[in-house]
Image (cartoon, rainbow, N blue to C red; front, top):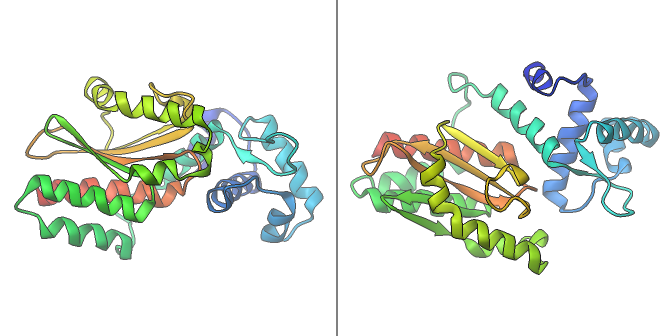
Length: 248
């Protein structure tokens, strides 16, 4: 799982460094604040000095950063990319566990509207909004359906006007960009500055391509802060696309 991600960056990371990076990403998603060495020391049952040493190495690699004078660290876009690559490398649809409650919620809502493609797609998007607390999006024919915009702007990252404006510009240009770029993977993740539009907006776009009555290149997904639970959100977006393709 981790070897291909390491090769992709051509770096030599220890297993503990990978685990610490993952913990920083997951803790930061939960607390919306820099993650300190004391918290991680308790988690890994090692000294704070050991954690600080490992954090310094991760910072040298460009995977975490120290904002302002805070003693804690936050992930960088590169750190998120390494983490997302690990999740994708580990994905195997033949060995997935049974669906959890969140996935079953999407399935139930989609099945309710199986005879009405537009309603089924909207229901899937609304489910993603409820489950991920992000902005949900989907293409329905030539239109882009969006739901949960309040979720996006309620995140602490977007309290500053310049961040909110950057997100608004991204939303204004999202539909034409999707038509032009036509992402061709079953699951596409664009993190922070990787977004071709709104590079400074600090958001991640996670979308799934699927076949629908409207197009072989229909999309469903979410737009949220780079600070989010990628493993959960990627799994749910992937499942939503697969479910819509199966039902429609």
